[in-house]
Length: 382
Ligand SMILES: [Fe+2]
Image (cartoon, rainbow, N blue to C red):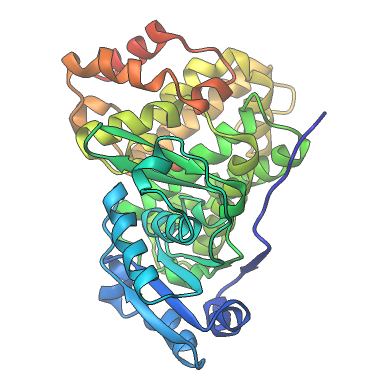
């Protein structure tokens, strides 16, 4: 067995821990770029829990707000321009996966001499970037503990990651209180994205015991608590458990990769402008069914941990019960069962399947999926 296991330098977790942001910022810089979105954190006033500790330091804050979901190359060019103009020495990202990915790429490319598009297309990055602090406000993307930033290029119609080991956050500050104002549909979609990370990392071809431990526990935490967090957003315990599950799933995926759900989610999301979490949430039980025979033992272990099957049940029977559980969870979270319900068109299927083929996620999927498999999966979504 051979592996490299990567995590941020420090992970701070727990209700109220955003209050420690000031002391973390003091370690890394004198002038920071604060990347933010325009979501519920701003409208609810929750953003003060982040800004107040940063303002309590004598550090200068340069604001980069209004970052849109599913960021483009241009989103990063804009934030890079601000960062370089003000000569910041630290980037802080506060938001969902999209904001964190922009913050990560901005810090990572700060000293780059090429355009964002050149790096997106494979240009080598010679220098490490600025330190950055990740503060997630959703429980799903895992971006606070991953080394990749998912970006879209509207010109080529491609959505993919730029990834470098040096892009891991200096510190991830995971405060479940910040997730309490997430709208219900975001709780559902981001939570299912986290569950997809956990299950795909657990069953990845590149998984190993260290990632299995994290991924298995993440699946259990999310399966036990996601519906409660969705049904009653103020349920602090459920929010905390889902945040922890999402964090653990993120570490697992960063080291074991993900699978066919993610291979399809990028082209489908890009083609129909759909949120990443929504596409993953629709596809997860379908891909689990496709993978069932290849990973029955692992699914069965999860099913037995969740008491969905008796200890003496066969692997196949227990694995089927897990797929059924995820399908029921999808329904209870009011997520559509088919991509056809959110825009998939029959004539697009060959192109979407073609676009998913080169994905590294597809290579990590436990059951080999060729072009015709992807076409069949998408056709079943009409
Ligand atoms: Fe994802």
